[in-house]
Length: 434
Length: 150
Picture (cartoon, helix red, strand yellow):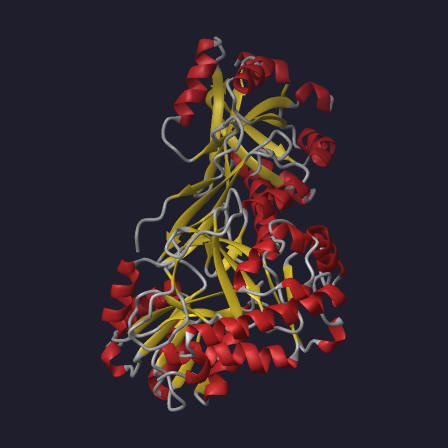
């Protein structure tokens, strides 16, 4: 089923007209309401009225994570914060998170709409029981899927994360048909079902909407086979809106970008020049319908390519290939974005800590886990075990509260972490393919 | 005797739980002609703390530091304890009466005139009270300079 055939199957020319009009309106509004954007636009000499085609996007300035830090918390809001009804947040590169604001229209007309399209991409209808195991809170996953599920008319189970055995019980007893969670959590559910002796055929799952982190084809096959469902990759980011930016339809030949709301570009990450369709580069998004926080040319750092070829499903949205990498060192742990620079900043706040640390990515069961190894300096060394354990605990608490995920901390001997000239090798990936 | 005379410098070393690290410490000390007189290891699943009494503690700290280890130096007391059933219990009883907490203890391999030599770590602030309690109980405490020569 296609949720909104009028927009999703619109002929490309018609949609381009719509996009240009919406882009022009958004730029005009930003030029009036957001001093930061006004200055950027003035520097390029661009008037909103000059925007005549999507090609004119290239004349607009980029917005980066660093710009979001500079304008924290409300500097890029196009409405006063009191006109918003919701805040979500995601990790910044250091210290302060990125704050995204939503008006009621943003949630109802944009987000719930594109999530309903996402659910329909996975085959969902109003008859489905949607088990939502994305985390509820500042993270966009939980509430994003929730409101879209209600919009569609699904029976939404707001399970949030954790307590997998209870989740399985609910899925079985309530007859859940669509599972929404990170792919790594789906694998955890598979393992737990096996441990509990639950035959997944007793579950009534038909589809899974998995996103917020990269996953492999192997993970997809494993989840589909074990849970007896059709696994769909969904994509989004807080800076743009959250989940609901793009989703895989039943053809599973790329993710349809809902570009009547979020216009994608692929650029050369070094020169910033737009690349032609089909070429691989950095994905950039411009929001053309949001009221509160319509970001212009946000550099996602995600690497992919776009195709504008028609899809077998009938949707005319362009498709992005599943994300193949990043242009920065961001890690994704349990769906949470983590930047090594955030960890460094926290460690340096603990005065006795050596600046020598290393991040080791491991697997804890099927989930990604992060171990932070810190060298023991003379200042923290003690001949008593409990004092060293207290140091570990202090680092662990500090990092866990700053990053929003649990990390393991391990003290290591001095000079054992490789020193390198220039950019230190901070991240060691010990994961094997799931 | 004063605290300064009796507190022996115990050398402690941070060790990750991985093979060969203990050997490396001992070999480093051996090359510097430093003799280990007593030792104990406290460990967790991740790391260990090696505690050593050696004949030249200052030199030991120096060579281990220059070999890249995290090294500390802690004051501990060496007590002569009658080598018979109940001997250690009596000494601990004396400390318990004074509410002195023993953070850890371990023994020398050798004896002096039939007495065992046991090392005690107490809170730095409790050293004077510990000495007083031991004196009342007639428990001999070794001077640090004697300990290094054992």
